[in-house]
Image (tube, rainbow, N blue to C red; front, top):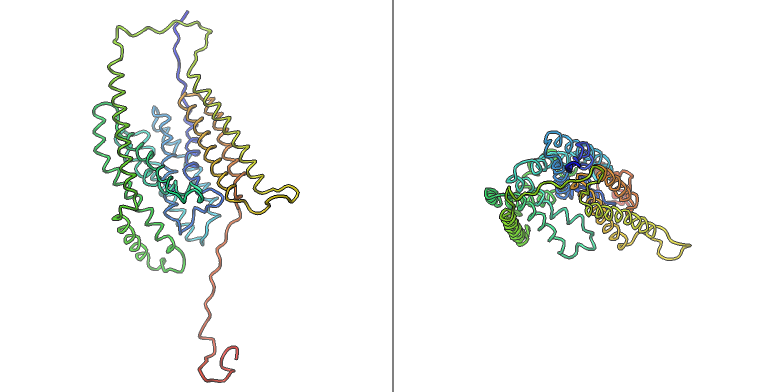
Length: 427
């Protein structure tokens, strides 16, 4: 008879590379949808919002190995770099403008991704009072991100704007650490709200000046004009409270305060009911061959979520089959209907949530085998999202229309009123 001790397994650092790549894909997912073109100068603000969300999520995966911060930072940064560079190159083939404009948009995406990955790593490994400040750009970009993720047929109503409330409330609540000294982080909340306000202003202003970033507007010769237009739009948007959804910001603060108060009450109750040193029970004696049961309920939840993800893959296959195939000429055989596009978006969101939920529970259990198996399921989900997309992804590079040459008026014959018919084109 020996004493039994439960050894907590640790997730390998190399797994953070895959998790960071997967998190970046989820953040950039609205720009990868079949009917989306992220590298569009007219939607430059939306592109920056995608890069902010994707980079922050990818960098935050470093929190899995807080015991090895240097290795976790390198693994998370490497995973994001691999998938981001590949995706930016592939999605660049779907760009709508000429190569110089496309390269500028890709460079902006890379710079924003690098900065936000660093912010995500600070939120994951830094002190608690810095979490709110590090996650503030994510909360500021959440409004634009959800606007791109929600299908157009469902975005006619304003229900989806409330999805930014839990994001901002979570960022504020996470900044408050445990203990009495953690309440000092409340002083950073006004700064967090100010950063959210500024990020929203920048995203909307970039969208406003986006159509000017293309050949023919004289930006190459006078870039200061573009910067002046950006400042003009930004100043107007910054001083317009209705654009920033002020009631939603207020509700976010209220919910975050409630979460903080509830957590403090739970901590105080747990400290008051904690047993003294004399009352602590000794570890139970356990036989050598008796297995230690470690959170069996979480394991069953993981299995159910993984099975649900696989079932949704079959639903996505059935949706694409009914969208593009008809039986013996009967029924509707045209392009995919709006209902099929909405079904694909909903199935894609459910597949992502279920597979990521199972993966998160495996990380919570510190199960290496669970993480590997759920990574395989997540890969299948990502592959099916590409293969069973509705509408189908067009992988052909889009070539911009050549500019129409202006007629050379100096070579055209002069035509005067009252002249002969030979002097005027057409007689």
